[in-house]
Length: 79
Image (cartoon, rainbow, N blue to C red; front, side):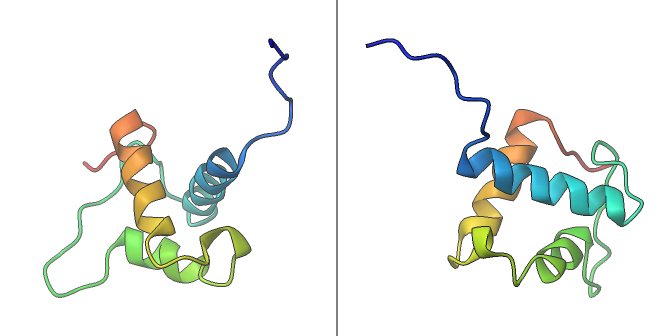
């Protein structure tokens, strides 16, 4: 049975939006993320720490999977 696409974003879309919003809040361009310097925490760690209390990222691998999805979709990239 066909049903129209819901205007409500699904869970994965909400997770992606939270990461993109946090990158912007940190003053970063999601398409030009700085690469991590050896021995120092990178932007991924900063974003993960900022969103650690978020209900949508409660599982151990949820954040990493969402980050990888954004990378593979081209919504985030490193310089």
